[in-house]
Amino acid sequence: MACMKLGSKPEAFHLDGQTLLCSTGLPSDVIIEVGEMSFHLHKFPLLSRSGVIENLIGESSGEDERNCILQLHDIPGGAKTFLLVAKFCYGVKIELTALNVVSLRCAAEHLQMNENFGEGNLVSQTENFLNEVFGDWTDSLTALEACEEVLPHAEELHIVSRCINSLAVKASADPSLVGWPESGGEAAQSPVGTVLWNGILTSSNPHPVSDDWWYEDVSCLKLPMYKRLILAVESRAMRPERISGSLMYYTKKYLPLMGRQSSFQNGNRAALGSTVSALSDADQRNLLEEIVELLPDQKGVTSAKFLLRLLRTSMLLHASPSCRENLEKRIGAQLDQAVLEDLIIPNLGYSVETLYDIDCVQRILDHFMLVDRDVTDSTNCIVDEAQLMVGSHSLTRMTMVANLVDGYLAEVAPDVNLKLQKFQSLAAVIPDYARPLDDGIYRAIDIYLKAHPWLTDSERELICRLVNCQKLSLEASTHAAQNERLPLRLIVQVLFFEQLRLRTSIAGWFFVSDNLETSQDPSGNLALPRRSTTQDEIVAVDDMRERVSELEKECLSMKKEIEKLVTTKRSWNIFCRRLGFRLKPNSSGPKASNNAKGSPSSTTPLLNTSQNQHSGKLV
Image (cartoon, rainbow, N blue to C red; front, side, top):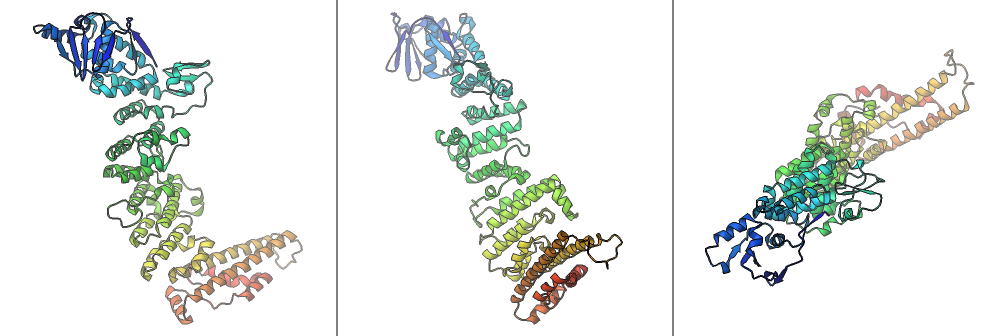
């Protein structure tokens, strides 16, 4: 820390209770009262340096000179600062530091201790030292904190703005040009191989540079000063990621609710909350609202995890509706970066209907869809499989959000108070093309149906319309075919599309097999013996036929499960006729499966389904 020594005389003051006496051997002829302290001093050393004290002594000259009492209760810095002023006037040794120079500069201005009352007066001495302080990071920070005690006077003399500008310049500079910065008291002792740069200790052998070197230092500032510093570094075109990082550090330090949710990886930073005095709820609420306003507007600069935890904290502190709306919009703009555990927000409203705040997530999701409106407008367009696999950036984001919403619905579905309309409204926001597979939404619906067994058949059919049976995986289709909670209509559709998929796959296998056999005879004569067929090709065909047999057995098993759901064969036939297709009597049993191994002709009934798929009949 920089310092400047003034005066040369030894100490000439001693304290007696609340009275400070000057031991120069001469009787005191003036008493100056500052607060509860009384200073017994001499007129000449004081009036020769201060215009204000000279005027006060002149005004009291007509009274009893032996009882000259002056009152300086409004002097900046109080009695502690006036003691240094008195020592300066007497020429006693004092030391200027970044900690006391601000109050001394303000007191000197208040007492008119300028060059009109002696060369090298206190105003010029403190001003010169302030310029030295502004060249050092640590001293500038110390001086800015000291401004809090004499804020109106420091603002008037532009000391606050000069401190902030000094800090902003140093924080905005690229530390990689000079190495790893280490601020603090260690800067006073520079070891061999180090260089002092603007009061920051740097090494001649630079370490990997971290952009967060200044976060901890500025976090000691009170909110008004910190806010002004952030605005200053922003005006100097600092990268928004660094600004956001500092705001996150500051928030976690002073909001205990944020600190309990997460901590820094660094061990020193993990215990921030234990060293900071707790703020009142009102102060925490004000701090949170100010931080939200200071966050950079650029999408992705502030992590979605931090924003979601900030939103949860704003609900606990009952922040303003505009603050919560701001956070919801920010989260919605980058919802694809969120994780499920942070999206689970408890319902903290006065009228708690559900365990979780579904309405908040609905608003966040609606804003995401609004941001990606161009993508949602293409819902009516056909997105083929190849395009879905590669996909545009917007489509990828939409798919990530679809998976997130499906997971969220599965988490909140067990809540018995969750209304069907809210569940359906949240699930329906996601367009159909955004889900490559519907396994996630099917799982959420199954959990919801299990937790709400009192739903009517019409309500069950209504919620199951969210599932596209053609986009269920084999595992999900097998589960759905045996799920007694699902409407019968959905089970039949699942079986139909699964059998359709099965027979299409089988047709593809035999098509490849026929092409393979034909390729062995360039003349195209299919009656020729298969002498040229290799042993590997024969094994591949046999394996394929065994797979066909297994798939047919699985299909047969699913059909038997359906038969268990109906009481009579007649009711089943009536239901099937209402659906617009008929079922062929079960003839694809083990006998058919055995025939599949013997000859490809056993697959002929299966191929009929692919030919009749446009007619909607399941043969």
